[in-house]
Image (cartoon, rainbow, N blue to C red; front, top):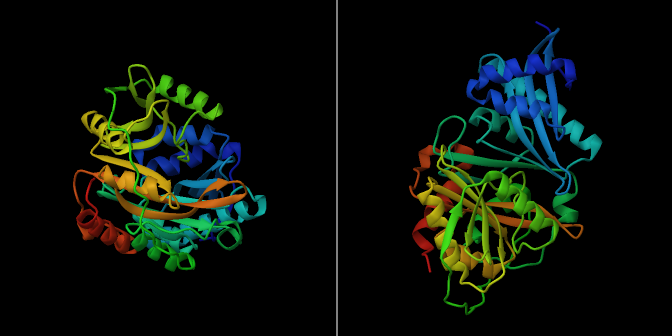
Length: 364
């Protein structure tokens, strides 16, 4: 048997790539077809002789200089597939280095199996968190996050010198150990007074409307929160006068939602706003809700915690801002607490920290 050779996929490879991907996950044929047609996606084909036996897809987001591994699969039993996955990742990262198209590449087990994500760690990706309640591709109740950083990103581009909210410190410690980051001080959040009012809100499930409204507001810089990579909203929670708008991506078939951004033209209580928006998303089918926030924003972190969310991951250098990259915290609001055995071993320290946070951090 000849060794597998990896190369950038050509247009003529699409049918064979789709066949390999579909065999691994027959239910995702539509997604694979869309990714093969997406100009933002770069594909690698793994060949033995003239046969394509492996496939990898990396999607780029130029404005954030992020890449996301959407697909990584190979034919064969574990002893065959493992080396093939490593070879595919090696070629993917080689292309990223040569093109300098991304500072960071990350993966989740929402689109990769646990074995496929384990191959990313062997390729130099770092475990950074869990999504406790977001179903994994393997069917488990916990998904995991890993990321690869280009040379110099963590040492030269990272915004540093800020203090952490105490609830975030355990997650930073895990990420710092994995990524070789320096210690950060811990500080209590400032006490803030907010207006007690919160308008009546309703959820509008209109995907094209939500996405276009979000795009226009972001282009006009009219969103107070507007960062969530590789995502666009399909629902909006809003007041009748549209002074309050919270944009989210809702997948009720998976029991999953992410809060992506907000526009506030009226003063509201942020904790009550997130409570109300989360309740509407839960009523629409989300048993797990996710949010992210700048790690240096102590007041924002405090409000998210007050709304019942719990930290579940720490992503250094996630957001590009003024030529620097800022750390972000991942938060989860989950109806059920998974058990430690629900996560692969490499993600258990983060899941353990999350389960502890559920006990210690109380809603305000």
